[in-house]
Every structure is written in structure tokens, then in C-alpha cells.
Image (cartoon, rainbow, N blue to C red; front, side):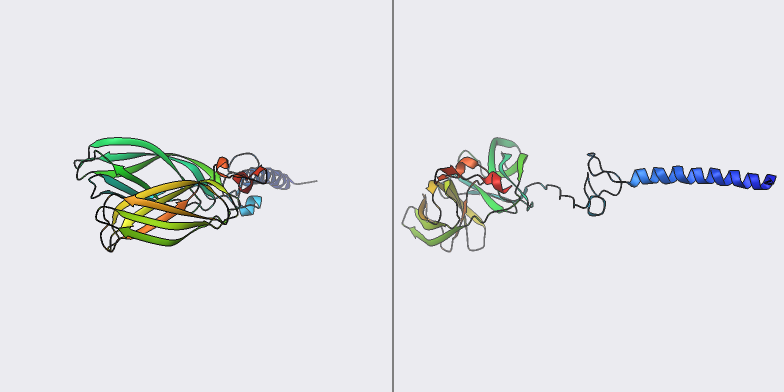
Length: 268
């Protein structure tokens, strides 16, 4: 027979065991990852992800496009050129549509123009957005790019799409400057449209003018010549920087080859 004290100790132990089971079950349920419920729980580092909890790393959050610099410069022709340097910090995401507003303000900060537009950008790319011959802008005006939305697209296997610029030549006469170059499509793809942005800087590196051109039907491993003209003479010591880009997120930009159309979707 158990003594009264032994009975009390036994009953107390039972209660303690029940409490331990309840608390332990609660903690286990709280910390147990499900990895499939669309929630961040347990030891998950994100929603249904985490190396320890789910055996897979969480994807890095998509970062916003950064406008690193923007210059609005008056040209000798009396109008304005614009060069905006933009950067995509994401190595796995690009887009064919960054929607933005180009806002022009006068010297007092009053908004005098607001123009919507879009541009495309590759993963990890830094590129120039250029505008030329902007008229009706007063002296002392400034420009700002306000990004309104981005249609991000993930790229699983980035492709090596390279354009090479060679045989650059600059000539001037008494009223204009001409820039010519040869561009090589060093990729394995045929493209419908190629965009060329040109930024001119002076000897100190300050932007003094821009230009742009585009051309169609650029076959793989072929050359195309470009020619742009400024209706004024660029200062001595000017440096011309040309960028060649194409929208790889637009399937119609990949021409048909051997009866089938290349699709960038297969790579992301």
C-alpha cells in the first residue's frame, strides 16, 4: 500500500508529466516547419524556405532599379539633351518594361513637364537612358526620373549576348560632327531591333551631349554600320561612349531561324 505522501508525490509527478507533454507539444508545433503552407513558421527563414528548415535557400528579395545619375544639358543648337544612368542590382531578374515619368522642373523647382515612358534592362546591368533635342526647356531647369512600376522577369540561365563596337571614327566640319562605327553581333541569336545610345563627355568627364539610333534585322555573327550626326561641332577632347542593347525579354525580337522562332522564355 502507498502511503499518503507517496500518493501525493505520484499524482504530482503525473501532473508534471502532463504539463511537460503539453508544453513540449506546443513548442514542437510552433517550431515545426511545414514548408508547404504558404506561411513563415517554425525555423523557416522565409515563406516555405530556409536551408535548415526546408533544405532550400530563400530567394533574395527583388531590389528596385536605381537611378544613379541624371544630367540635363543645353547643346550649342539651343535645345537640351538628357542622359540618365540606371542600374539593376538584381542578378536573377530583368525586365522589358520599367515604367517611369520624366519630370522637368524650372529653376524654382516648379514642375513644367511630366512625360511617361519605359525602358528595358538586363540582370545586373548599368545602362544609359538618353533623350535628344528636348525643346521648350528654360535655362536652369533640372530633370528627374520617377519609376512607377517594373514588370520583373526571372532569368534562370542568362545567355551571353555580346555586341562589339569597332572602327569608331569622328569627323567634324564647320557646322556638324559625325560619329561612325561598326557593330558585331557576337551572339548566337538573330535580332529584329537593336538600340544604340550615345553619350558624349568633355575632357573632365561631364556629359555635354547625347544621341541615339536603332536598326533592324541583325543576324548572328554579322556586322552592321551606324552613323549619327550632331548639328554642331563637338568640343576638342570630347569622348564618345556608345552602348548597344536589345530587348531579350520580347520574344518577337528574336527572328525566326530555320523555320522556328527563338524564345527567351526557355531560359527563365
